[in-house]
Length: 209
Image (cartoon, rainbow, N blue to C red; front, side, top):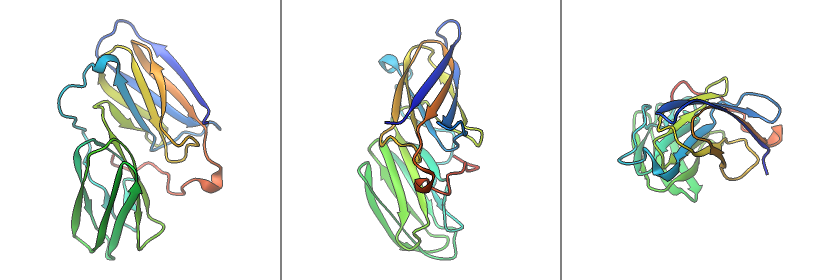
């Protein structure tokens, strides 16, 4: 199992607040592209459709998926535009969504609906170096860490909840959950990582979510 250390700092009353999460490897290295979610206790603040502030788009450009990790709400339709001069054949064998977008070229676009929460690993049948991930989330409280390994989740209802963290290079096969106390405004998480030889070389934060 992955090593997990969580340090929480507590604020005052349980009011709507922001939570700043720092994610590092067990060697102390900041981890960009970590998915951070909060599920408030009792489903507080979870009513209605889920919308995020970033584009629900997974672009193929420079023979890579951009962004490397994309968080989308469950039930959303993701666009897959091809901005390369070569054709791509995008696919996934993940349990959360199996699909195949057969060969399509520059300036063409395909779409896929993601109707089940979970991690979806992406590949290209033509270019083996292309690896990307879509994390399908069932909570409006979501963020992705930046180059410093930090993410901020805004507008939490302030009560207790569950903090969920996932990263492509973590040892654990499933996201890790940790109890979040009412009023917590910061969290520091250390994840056990795969050996360096098994980590994805393109695990860098993208400009866009």
